[in-house]
Image (cartoon, rainbow, N blue to C red):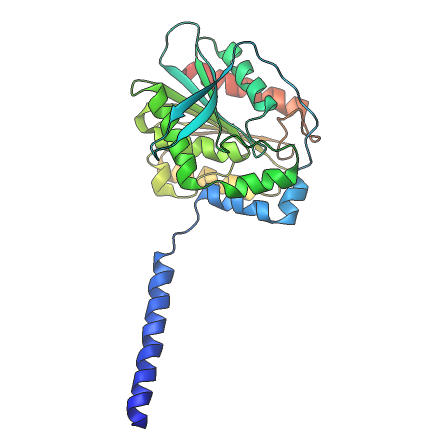
Length: 281
């Protein structure tokens, strides 16, 4: 009887080990954007993002739009429609504060400087906007990858199958700019990242259709020089072109509502960005 009980206990032990091993194999490794969002749970990360200054912008040409998403829901965005019909679209993705006045202002600036291009500023927070780092951290952590992808795919469907898609984003949106470029497939013609978390899987980077322009900050504690160097190496392994620009500035340097705003770095980065986008859109 004792031998029977012992054999049964051994069986249960082996089964438990096998089950744990199987579960470990099935656990999906967090993606690049998820890894970046997880940083928001740390006090160090939140403290590195100073609360923004008040920033007000009133547009006379931009408007809120609503479109269907493939998850059976709807999404909101802010659109600046080209004056003449065109298939050129630029998807703009907000930083961790959400689709606020700064993002709308930048979207309109790009719209005016690029010429005849449709600009759509996406809202991956589904209407939530933060004015402090604690709320921003909560909103960024709450983003579900499946929902964010649905919002992007819905925007791509709104633009249409013949649209030529460029993407641009800052911080949280910088990482999602690259993910949007991947989701756009052959429709993607340009991708701009401002200090966003790069995709780390070479296999995914191989599927990029366009080249990438990256504006990164050497003083960034999180998307640091090592992360950027690895991204450069991974792009080379994938056989893709990365136009890399690095500045003696900190994370968030291109936002004038950010206390660490760097006007010189912003001006230079924007000149590279504008030239890059004009050539492709």
